[in-house]
Length: 439
Image (cartoon, rainbow, N blue to C red):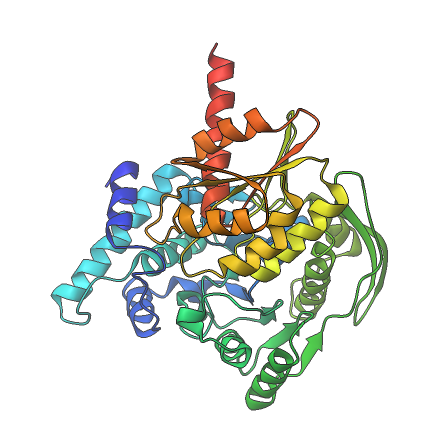
């Protein structure tokens, strides 16, 4: 398959969430048929509701600065599927992706032909296998794996990690993980495994902490609990500086490339994980830690596009994420704010609207290219309830056009509600830049 054919094939397997198969037997058989590439490197696995992608990116950045051969596997992607798979800070090439996708497809179909599987592995399972093969080819020493959904039955959980990191746990994907915090926490806690080490990030729900502790006791793992960053301050654009006293060291005036005060907590989790890794053969000098945090990039999370008006892209897609975004907007976003909003039917739209709609002068809802998309009527009712101007559009590009019409140059356009939406708007902005360069 060429690149276009490989991407088309993978998407033909069904929606990443709706068609997902939450079982480990399939990914186990697929990787075994490929020679168990995930056993060729050490790994860190990062689970949680919010902050797991940022934390994973921070750990990888630090270890790469320390000179180790690193890899990073994340999901979902914003624009290109290759964004999910990186080694040494660089995305897999389209040529390598299509080549490995062809191998994984062949092995998948062979498993069905031999009767080992009834149907071919899912989109996420096959992309995970592509990543593992690529990491093996690149002679990866340490891969940082972000859990896709949950943890217990996520395809990434075939790994036997050196360190398992759990970031904050809150309500999300209840239709899969359960409707209560203890059930959600239990799914995520399953990445904590006997013989590994564990880092437990700050939790806002006592029940989550209790479940995580029970899992540590069950597996005989002594966890490190992340402390509170102190002296947290922010530059005018929201980039954070903070102090932190870890289990082993004291750090002053750590600077983050990422925006948002909550990123200090994610960075603290990354610091604790890196210090454990140092004990396990992946040493990271203080300078590497500082440089890694200062240089980490994580698109679509409080990502600022310097234009007039400025555009802030954020993937907040659950109530906790929406509240963190609101805090950032209240503190840093020039007014007035126009909110481009789109989300999925399975999300708590009312809670997100309660957090975000009050800070916006106008709300523009747009269609998202996803079958789970929440139509405009429910969101319109919430906008009317909040007494905000409401505009409905059929595409992200049109939403951006409308937002610029109603937002003065000194204001802010904020995109939120879904990482898919953030990606669609980011793609529209990149198209505009390409067209302007071509003129």
